[in-house]
Length: 71
Image 1 (cartoon, rainbow, N blue to C red):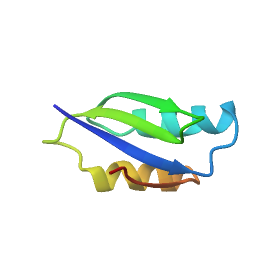
Image 2: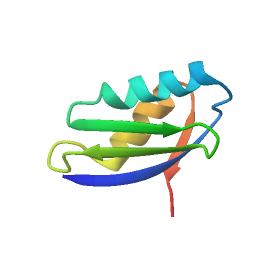
Image 3: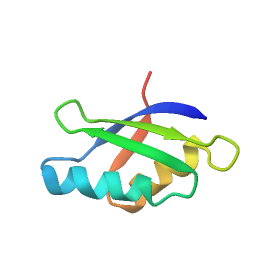
């Protein structure tokens, strides 16, 4: 299992937060996704044997938001 923090841009409300969370949880291999709206971050626990951070970023982008690995 791996953990990554993503910086998410474009979230402005609870609906945005839910969309990003659902997008991440919809990726096969994601165990949990916790979205921090005020800080613009997503903390994701995932199976690094079946999903990459690039796929997580792409899922957020497909939902209409920007994302990059924090750090």
